Each structure stands twice: as C-alpha cells, then as structure tokens.
Image (cartoon, rainbow, N blue to C red; front, side):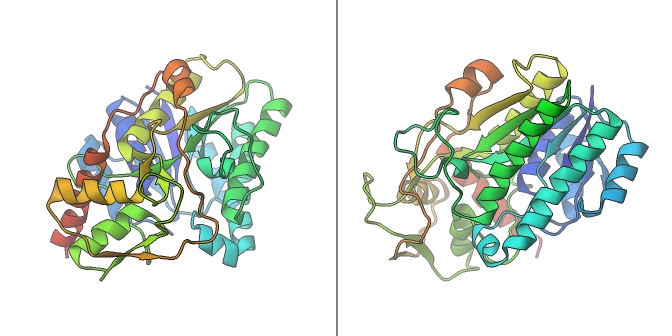
Length: 340
C-alpha cells in the first residue's frame, strides 16, 4: 500500500483514477481547486471505492500551500492531472494557461524535490503528435509544434520533467499520452461533468439526447475517412484510470527502464464521429438530432494510437468496447438528470 497524491483528483479522469487506486489498495490524497469539478465528486469516489480520500482545496499555483501539504503528509508518488484543458479557451487566454498549467507543475516538482518524493505520473496528451504522417502514432512519432497554448503546456510539461530527471538522481517520471477518453463508471454514478459548453464529443451527444441541447453538430463530413467524419482513438475512462495504477506501481516497484518514460493510452483503433453516434443510438435506443457543420480550424483528420509499448512494457491493455463507452456515458447523463 502506498500513499498517492492525485492533483485534480475530483475531475473526470482524476476521480476515476482515485477509485481504481483505492480498489488496488492504495491510500489516496487529493488536491483540487474545484475550478472544473464539484465537491460531490468526493462522495461518489467514497461510494464507488468504499473509502473517502484525504482532500484539500487550493490552487497549486500557491507554492506555500503546496509546500505545507507535502510537509504534513507522507507521499510516495504523485499523479498530476491538475490543469486547464480547453483548447479554444487557451487560444483566447494563453497566459492564463501558461501560468496555471506550468507554474502548478513546477511547484509540485519543487515540493517533491524538497520532500524527496521521487515518482510522478504526468497527464499528457496525444495532441503532441498533431496530424502524423504515418498511423498509428507510436511513442517515437515526432512531436510537432503545438497548435494551441493548451497543447504547448503539455509539451513543455514533459520537457520540464525530462530536465528534472537529468538534474536529479532517482527522480522518475512517466508521461501518459491520452487519446480521447470517454464513458463513465459502469454504475453510471461517476462520469464527465463539464462546466458550461462541453469541449468533447460525448457530453454533446448525451446532453443532446437528454434534451439539454437542441442539436449535435458534426464538424465536417468531407474528410478522407471511410464515412467522411473525423477519426479519433476513443478510449474508456476506466481503462485510462487503470493505466495510471499500472504506471504508479511500475515506478514504486522499481521497474522503470529509464527515469523518464512515455506511453500512449488508446485502443489502437480509430472510430469516426459517425461511428460513435451510431454506437450511442444502438446501445441506448435514443435517436440523436444532428446536422453537419463546417470543419473546425485545428482539427486533425484522423489519429489513433499504437498501443504495443503500453501492452508489452507497462502490462496494460484497453479492455472496454465503444458500445460500453457510449452506454456508460448515457447512464451517467440519466443519473445526473435524476438528481435535479
């Protein structure tokens, strides 16, 4: 059993990871400023895992509070989710993203160094690959200049950790490059809860089906893909969460092959926007009202992961299907509606 600090642990991926960590026998501590989540997330984590994490609410940009937290608690490893994550917002307010995402990470790494905590898993993103010339994208696929300040903070965050591993003996980091997490806990009682307008496809689908939105817009149906809609590697959030448990246990168990490692997290298969819609309609029996809109600037045509390294080296594999992703997301949307 280890004490794992999960920054941003009340958010979408963070809360599912907290549940899986507790189920695996670890103690979980959470820091979150609740800027993109709610305190009720702790109740859901407790109900679904059987244990309530230690929780403190503050911004990681406050270095004094970060230092105080590390002095108060024994921490064996960190999973760092806490970051702003809306691409469009980052383009409109770049300094907000650079200050929040990078200063927060720097404060955490500083506190780790002072407290001699040596293991961190970093929440990174497949956006670092842009539109690869060759698919599937592997961990060796070249990183391209970011198309948004958000994407750039992920690239810089990885470089910060690489530099720290060079400067500090026994400092270990794993960057997990997610593709497109969707879905919810199988109970339907924990899932994605966007504030305001969603940034991702699945909440748009479920909110349209439940009647919160009049129509779903498909941005572009003229891509060079089998049905003309953009293709992404959609992966169940619970599979993502389990990968974090594997990564933490890899470092704590001294199994890392180098101080800095990278793993892609995806299914290894691309699904088009239309395929996701078709799956949702099939699994739920709901008919979606949708129309086609022009392509959005910055959207890549298609991207999906090579998961060979994660499968063979990390010992992890995505197990849940697209139908399980869409059905679980709908169960979560209906659960939210039942609480109103």
